[in-house]
Amino acid sequence: MNILDLGLVCHAEAEAIQLRRLPLVTAGAEDTLYLLEHPPTITLGRNGGRENLLIGDGALAAQGIELVQTSRGGNITCHYPGQLVAYPVFRVSSRSGGLRRFFHDLEEVVIRTLAHFGLSAGRCEGRPGVWVGPRKIASIGIGMRRWTSYHGLALNIGRDLSLFRLITLCGLHDVEPTSLHHELQDESISMQEIKHVCAREFRTVFAHPAVAAHETAD
Image 1 (cartoon, rainbow, N blue to C red):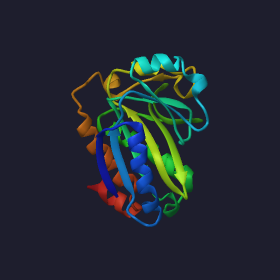
Image 2: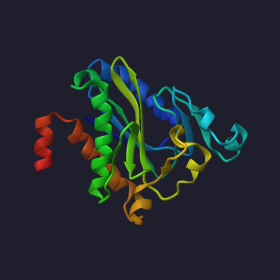
Image 3: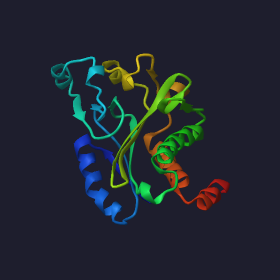
Image 4: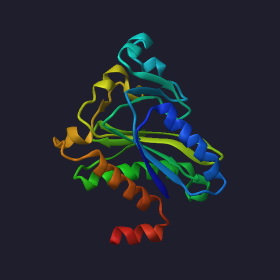
């Protein structure tokens, strides 16, 4: 697995990078994971989401917030500095379990990453993503071309969750966002450290089962 840290990059540039890599991975090149942060951005899924936007386009522009229609699954969410975004360009066709298992494994990466820092998180039946009790800490929305994935997951790290006030998160009126720093009341954990752990968990979860077992044992 090739893992690249893109730093802070706008959504359009990150998508272009994925789309350039996607046909190469489909043709047999190494699976590639991009880790990054976005400037303030609200994204709409291919299933909609504009109806869950609580502010007009002009007001968004005045605040320097970009609104993007994407080709990923899911509804509306937002991105901002202080949120870790992971975009896996992976050949799903080469893995057992298909799309359902792939989605489950993305959730597992987040759950294991948070556990490393002492935060217990899990799944919520019928509601995609990763949760800490009733609070959502990570959203997942993927795109697929010829059984190769792009887009991915967004894990809230920093305490400032104010951007979520502008949307009805994922179209669910009873959902409250949360973050790693908010839950732990500890801001000493750096984004770089979290990226390192997340990359390690991607390698473990998405490795061949025998390799994953060996890495866990170590």
